[in-house]
Image (cartoon, rainbow, N blue to C red):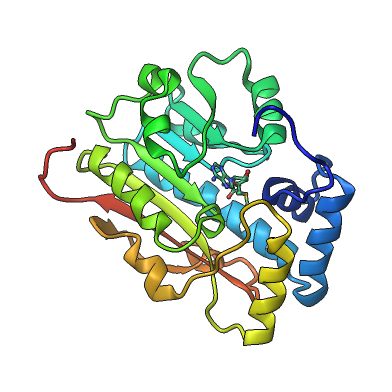
Length: 262
Ligand SMILES: C[S@@+](CC[C@H](N)C(=O)[O-])C[C@H]1O[C@@H](n2cnc3c(N)ncnc32)[C@H](O)[C@@H]1O
């Protein structure tokens, strides 16, 4: 996607930026985002809740001693970023940001150009090997040590069983003591017409949107031990934000088992 982009095609990253009140979006992004907001006025709150979850989860990992992070589906940089949160606890924390949206990549690279302990990698999460074998990932991330892998509000842009395949790749690389931070859009509690509206709004984006049931999202933590309070709405993961009608379910899992990584 780096060769350029069509500003007439909405992008999930720029729609999310619009929900969060950012300026890095185009008319097509705002139009698609407004279609979601029209049927779900609390969509902006949902984005804020998700972002607040991400911050709390990174704080949790940093408190558990994690100093290296891979943040897949980074989004347009939003303060505080993952490395800013992690460095409150570990000033030497290393972070690799991964995204495939050219606007995200351009903003993140401009912001982080001077920081040798942070890298911005262009990759599609559906090619996880391209992520783990990327020279910047090999330079900054030591998979023989516990690592935090973040897939926050990104797996609902992946169809069918693909999320499980992506996670299997990372699970095999993550030594016990590593953490998975995951949130994903849920179909829970939505009526069929509501689901259709959301799917139609995201069908305009390159890969569409794929909401999942609580069982499907919980199953993505296979091989990980869920931290309290388990898989819950983002507003309730160790926080009390205003809950929303559409739910993004979230959890933090600790890699268990003695199986050697491959
Ligand atoms: C809703 S934003 C979430 C941003 C951030 N993780 C957060 O939760 O605040 C989703 C991000 O995932 C990225 N994304 C979507 N599909 C992707 C893919 N196949 N590979 C890499 N990144 C992807 C989008 O470009 C966007 O930046």
